[in-house]
Length: 305
Image (tube, rainbow, N blue to C red):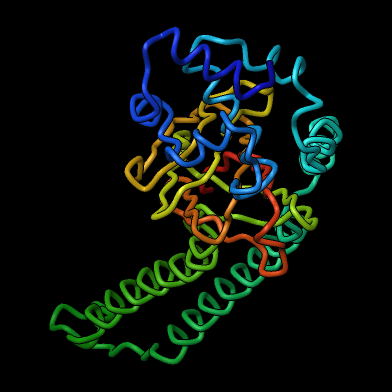
């Protein structure tokens, strides 16, 4: 008994028709018939052959891993399956190397702040010096009047008191202006951190990103107008989604808050849209869309200063 006959026998034992199985697995009926007949040529690729067989086996209560091992000689080989184990081993190494990288601008931040502080001090000194010169220029001599009682009395012109008060007010305003100008460069550094993707490492069908996330929440959303096999895991290998993904399933939203890394594996990359917290993940232009893509995303939670 070959693999297709084994699956068909299990389906009939559960009194399921191919249409019933299509509703359960969301795999087209013609692909299900091809699996039962062993006609794998009609499949879109070796990767989908194995994925569809696993879905079929699960739907009829068979162990997919045991079934794949038992009938491995009946299945076509897949170079993608041979390389996945190596990729998972490399994942931990990428985590270590990528976590040590940080934006270069932070290394220059102390120097920038020091220069701004010096400029602020110079501005304050200049404004105060201008205030002193103004007071000297506005000084006027008093007038000596002789009263009838013979005593000497010094009086000032009527506008002299107002001038002195205005000088004091101007000096205070100049001090406030200088403090505002001193604080203005510092406030310019307090910019909002926007969520964004940065490519850390890139291969033909493997890409590693850093996702700068100013919030604690991490929500992954997938959407498509076609069909794909999609696997979604965290950095420790815990699976959140592993199945065929159809247009009727869009959008698929998964809360990944608290995860340090996200792993995605999918086919037909040109028709699949991936976003995190509303920011679209742009795949490199030079990838091979015919190959199954693997993407690692390192979550970098950074708050605005």
